[in-house]
Length: 361
Image 1 (cartoon, one colour):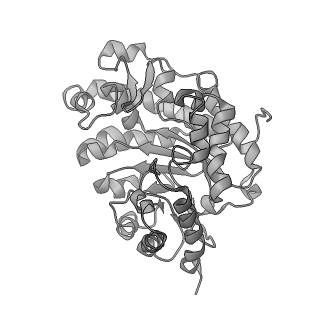
Image 2 (tube, helix red, strand yellow):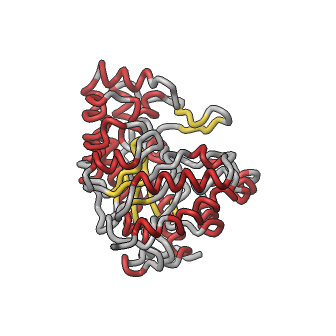
């Protein structure tokens, strides 16, 4: 595997650019499909590697990250790959000690809760601090040989803030939300810092060859509409505005932010990923054609019988309706105990059943 620096294919160079075209609301022959967390726990190939290596080793070793990224591409023939990594590499590189605990998830042993904690955070040198991600992107793009694009990603400023202040995942995120209410100026300083780091990180991913980037605002649904506009949406806009990119689409996935869909359409993103609790047709009306839409099959549908999977997938296609600008995806990530054969059934069905929705009169 070569370590080349300029491996990104041109837009015209992709053998299958349907995903990129859909993100830009350009005509496609069918609705392209990829899935969040398509590289990971549900695949036997991944489980075999996981028996040999811990999770941190997998995402910090470029050769292993490349292999895991490519596993679902080989198995399912999806229309885009997404790099195997973790959103918490950014705060870890900023100086927070991160530990993954079985059954508990990621934990920061020293949360960021004071002014002193914020001042101690390192400003990233992305090329050095996150070189393992950039190498994995470069090498994956080379392995893909222009067949399909690779998606890079990061957590949003608010989502990383929530983990960093809380120290771990939580039902209430007491410490993170308390800072918004009681110390809003401090919260804004941390979010401003994170916006700069995330923009630099995503720009570096694009320079390394990512054909698109997705920003995961996984904890956006914790906030009221007013708090969301002030502490999440405002910083999503800053990240997107600061990105150094060409024609690479930007996708925003804001889970649970139902009241903010119209505002997210003004964020500068090219595509909004919608969770499964929102009717896709409603989201299309709210956004008024300003952005493409991605989603939004309930991940639990993949536990069902094949005929049910096909029926529910068709419902999603019908919810969006005819026309361009739809990327088929799940409303969240693939669940760890899903049968891979059911994923294959979904991919094959969407590719064929979606074609009538793209036929011109």
